[in-house]
Image (cartoon, rainbow, N blue to C red; front, side):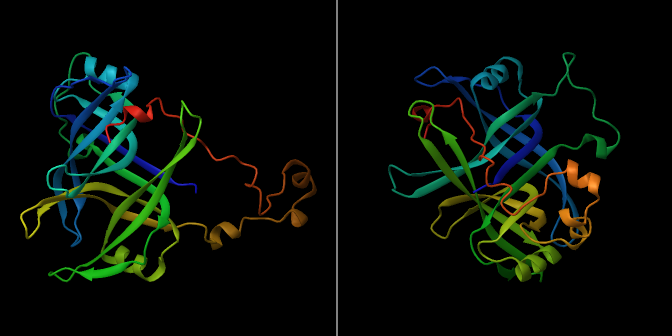
Length: 283
């Protein structure tokens, strides 16, 4: 299955970077970022807030971060969402935590340090963006808040494939993303999207915490979507410009290869090879 799982953040490191070494000598560190943001609520109100994110950085990027990234430093990271699950050794309770595994990293502060905050709020914004392409895991179920707002939660599954560097075995990991939609977008998705549909989702990452009736603490990480597109569907505007080979001008027929239904059959699926060894993973 071809899918996309990408998150981009611009934020600030909240504490000194601590570099660790795996038993095989691979460098790894966890960045703890705060991302100030502004967004429109389900009621249409413009709000400001902040999000806290854990970003795991491996290899050379981890070494660079430990040398040059200071507490308070601004940084851009791009990577993928990954949810780790485990069982508490004492209580036996199942727990999970969602983090970002970095694939790109750019330190944003100059050698002279940070500039003063700009007068225009728009120019001082950070970045919190997630983009997912995957299959919807269940039919949407609409709910209504106590204030009368429509809210919809759907699940979207994406996958990642890679080849193990030692065994050469092809491995696959599936991520399940919780997607929250509000208002008109929630209504449209509830009417049109079904289980198994392939969809593109774009929005911001949000982590919520609460306490259960038994006193246990819970957290969940969601994509609060502002755009959802059904994929693999016909588009009337695009179809107006699609010309069959038989009706194309003679010169065009000579230069442009025809597109057939199985044109992508011979295209190999992209394989991602990570420098991280399976035995190094802490889960």
